[in-house]
Length: 229
Image (tube, rainbow, N blue to C red; front, top):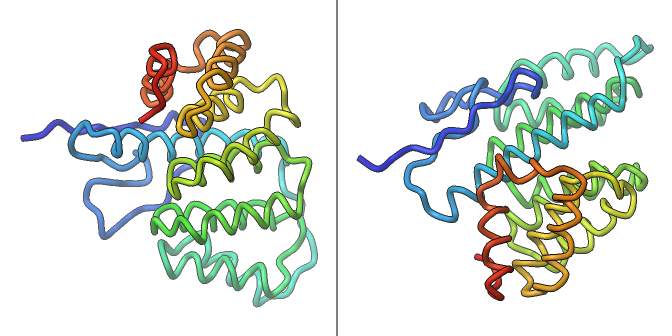
């Protein structure tokens, strides 16, 4: 039997939706992916990095405060949080369209992103993050999430580089942003830039690559003078 790659989310990460139609995944773990292929490692890393960025973004927003909002929007927000996959995503969109209160828009948008990731609807997820950076252009985590989705899910390294460069510009002390940019440079064949970004990430946080096998592989390839993967 092929080995399984299972990435368990620490308790400080937000729970991902239950994927009832997939027995290999649940709200407490990221997908169990069979085989040790580059594709599976990159897929797991995408979900892990999105969860990490989401945690930082939610922490920055602070606790939500009650606000007057339509009853229909409240009901759709409740369904957004309770339902999974396509039904959950539809409810999230309805809650936003019906005018959910401003203090709840962030959490509802985050829940929608999780539903889209669970559905593996990467085009919709990228568009969702594009809306996020258009709405909050100074949000470094939103730029990072867009860049990671473009890089790992849609395989658009040039666009990913642009998004991750903006994330680094807005948060120059964020080692994760530098590591993501380094991987995008590596995929693009910009090895000198990749090495420089990796070095800066490790300078900021020597442990930043410890839980990122794909990033470590990209760094090793760049040091050999090869692009990755």
